[in-house]
Length: 364
Image 1 (cartoon, helix red, strand yellow):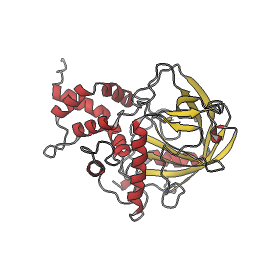
Image 2 (cartoon, one colour; image 1 turned 90 degrees about the horizontal axis):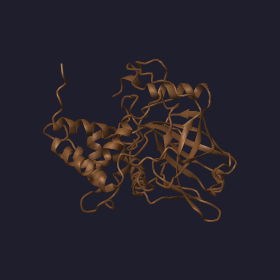
Image 3 (cartoon, helix red, strand yellow; image 1 turned 180 degrees about the vertical axis):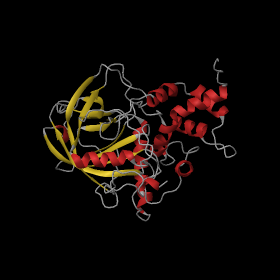
Image 4 (cartoon, helix red, strand yellow; image 1 turned 30 degrees about the vertical axis):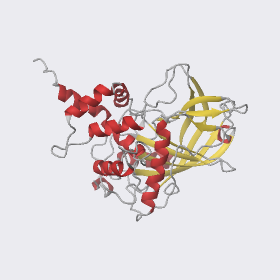
């Protein structure tokens, strides 16, 4: 029997579903103050939208709420030292405090293979020239400017009467932003690994490496796992299986990733994180990240850290990507908000057993 073609409204809603998951990620990054578009978009309206999506969870991060702290070190090999004077890229070892998390503001959300995973790192070389990064396992960012984010928010905001987006608004947004269809398809069809340990995490935004002679080189970077990538293993009966697996892995042996720096090619777009770069760019293996311990956020070393991507060492500067400023402002405002709230009981603790069905598995 022939399949009936989808009507335009159904097509629009299906297309919106392609970008629904990363929308929460973008929202968490961009709910900063009125500087975005002061007459149309304010920090209050964005905060209200975030709460409408994920609910109110006092004391937790407003995005990437479900996570754990990790510690270890980064060992530079000097391969990228010709492009940047940053001390962390010179040969040598520096301590690292980090965090693994799922995107979104719900600390007790259920783990699932396609949910956006993040790695946040604070590299701390001597002399205070630290490098912070928040990197994610999606290939591109779902929006390119704060204004386009506003358009996406308005298009996807649920109608109070139906609890679903208005198909007419979705169709209008799709017509006005055709580029997002390609970005959403890349995110939806990205390869999925089995867990945090064998996943690749990307900067998404571009930065500039500054050499000793002042030469600036546009780059992006990734943390590529040294652990072999294994097929997805879904644990439908385990609410927290991704975190349980990470805890088991890091208790069993150190986990490692290679810092791979990608140099922009002649035709790569520098200031648009929704655009991927060509496959033939120059790639540099700049060093190895090793993580050896995992701790609860209740007392772990990452709890009071904002992983602001604009905390950069000498030798690395921001590109003109407007999303970077919005991310930085959001991280600061999220920290200020949760600092005035009672510290919560964390969603994940490293003492969790591998067996499903415990207290953590029953949270919602």
